[in-house]
Amino acid sequence: MDRESIVAGLPEDSDMWTNKVRRKFYGKLPPEKLLPDRQPSYVSSWIYVFGILTVSALAVVALSGAILAVKGPSWWHGSSIGHYVNSLHMWSVELFFFFMIIHLWGKFFMASWRGKRSLTWITGMITFLASVGTAFTGYVSQQNFDSQWISTQGKDGLNAAGIGSFFNVLNFGQMLMWHIVLLPLIVLIIVAIHVVMVRLRGVVHPFPPKGAKDYPADDKPWTGKYRRYDILKEGTIAMTVVLVLTILFAVVFSSPDEAPITLQTWARSAPVDFVSTATSELAGTSISARYGYPYNNVPGSGQKLGPISFPSIFGVTIPVNPAQDFVLKPLATVTNDPTLASYLSTYNSAGASQDGKWVDAYTKALSKGTAAGGVVSVPSGQYGPVPYMMNSLLRLASSGGLDASLVAGTGFYGTDYTKPLLFLADGGYMAGIAQKQHLLGTQWGMMNETGNYPGQAWLWLYTFWYQISPFSTSGNADVLVWSIIIVLSLGMMLLPFIPGLRAIPEKVKLYRLIWRDYYREVESEKID
Image 1 (cartoon, one colour):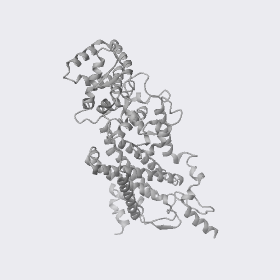
Image 2 (image 1 turned 135 degrees about the vertical axis):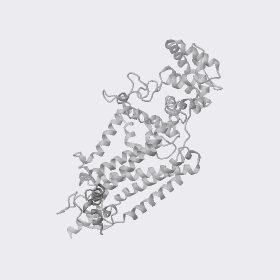
Image 3 (image 1 turned 120 degrees about the horizontal axis):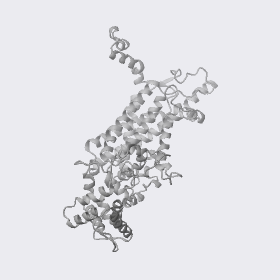
Image 4 (image 1 turned 180 degrees about the vertical axis):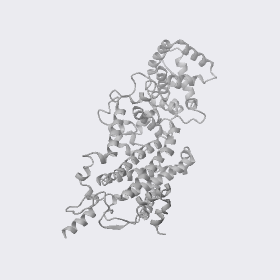
């Protein structure tokens, strides 16, 4: 029985669901389309190679990421083999984005959405956007200094757009699950759909050459010459190239892994900054205390797009009370210091007015504070129990107890670092280290990485807006930049339907460079 008969099945089975799906599938995607051995003659430009290179790099990303996931998030920090696998993962990601961006720009200048291929273009753009999200969650899941800094800075844009209410980049456990399960699954599904659409619709025709007659419409089968095309051989070569490049980069350059900062490190290295920050938490004047949604309800706080406050739509979804969570509750866990217990009782019973006077006076005195022997000293004054409380918190942090206290509240298997990271971000110590590493927003920090390693270069357009006015000085910069990025992303995704923009490739004529061999051949034939 031939293939057509097998596909059609028996006449009495024509009403079966299985039979209908099989006939539909084979009708749209027969084997010669899924695994073609011929392609139109114009498919000879190097730009076509970047599609299969992108898929090959994605395969290496998935394989190296799977190994890291199986061994656990701490493995690569303490194992030389693990560190090398992480280097493979990082460099395969860099190659993946490099190939994909060239692939997308090539398809743009080919106007590859022509001929009912708009869904092919849209799935390609969705793949890029989903890949950016996947890579970002990977960066904030590294459990090193870079992940700390990126998460504390990235939260502001996400919170301003309202996304941070349910997508908490300071929660390591949540980000890890997004990175190794949810987002990769989305990427793989969209890539599969994209590849199927390419096989279903075929590659777009070149624009008509000069003097062309009876040229096939964009949505019609190609009527010109064909050439041999071994898709499996090309895929094998592409995978080999990607593997060689990834292994080479991983051997020569490795990957960064600067140790994370802890509250203990901060307290020991910059005790005055630590105590000053802790005092601002107690006073309610710190960044976290005045942040607003999704951490707390502070009237007038937060960024707005005109009259709209996106965070307020969801309200307080990640409750944080800095005075209680960062200072008073941790101090209450100290059980071997009756003096501290007495001072805490005095502070808690004095009333808000008296507490405010003590804290204000102590805050001003800290400008002349000095540290010696694990204690911060200030000139004499009316500070009540505050100096003893702050030095007790300093001792607790220096011993590592504060780190444990702020994470312990999330459960036995604590993976939510929201509170310690917010506390760290309120001080100047972490920002000072970030500045030396060129990670600040004014230093194109989102694109950078600790050391001299490449970072998230694909975020250049997002980072760009923070470098220019009015965004560089606006109090609503995050929500404004996010609005621009959303509009631009939608514009690129829906480009096949936007008059003017979709005509750019034909007017720019870079397609003649991409298909130069084809045009040279057919136009010379017409001259002859």
